[in-house]
Length: 286
Image 1: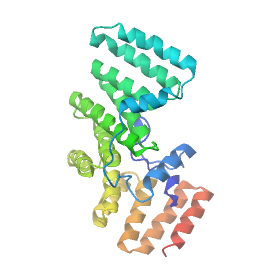
Image 2 (image 1 turned 180 degrees about the vertical axis):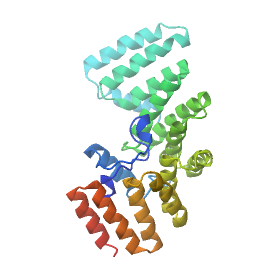
Image 3 (image 1 turned 30 degrees about the vertical axis):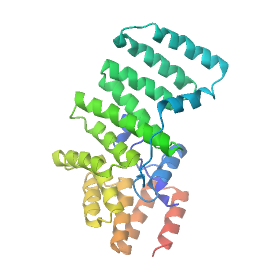
């Protein structure tokens, strides 16, 4: 495993604010480390082959089988309330209530689905982003490719709806790009969103970071170098940009420069375990 999991490198994890990759000079929590390590071992976590998405019914039916009796009773109460409402617009708060019940019993994909239904009925930018981001978070740690695909598709629908309400929200564009790239494998769709951001705002940090990592993955090292240097000019201690700039120089064959940057990462992160992994990694290619 590469030592990158000690650096803040999540492509699209956490709530909306986490999408903004600011300079993070401290190691993340163990939970974030695990997600980062899984997602970034060789670059972006892009599906290699088309996967048929799971159906909501199959996911919900499987979830119901795991619920205790009292949870089923709680759901039945809210579902009865929902069935008694004829006006679809008035169903929004009840869908939200239903999502809360599923969330309380740790069934987050089902909760996100009902939050999404509520948000679409309300046409609320805030709630569309909340539900979309919840799906995006779930997508990045789902153990089933079919469920991951379904979560990604749900996320895309919600973020697209949000962008109709506020086309200028770059954070949502980043989230949507991540859903396209990491969720459904439609890399070019995601790249076009990211390029749209950098055309208007060339110094945008999160878009440059994601484009830089994609450039490494496709072997476009000169492009990657420019992206990471753009970030480091603004945030000299951005460990994500520094690590991947080192990877860029390594890919270009400049091992001396790569090692120099990896050593700088060690100084900033200041973690003995990280130092050990960086040293092992350096020894593997020098």
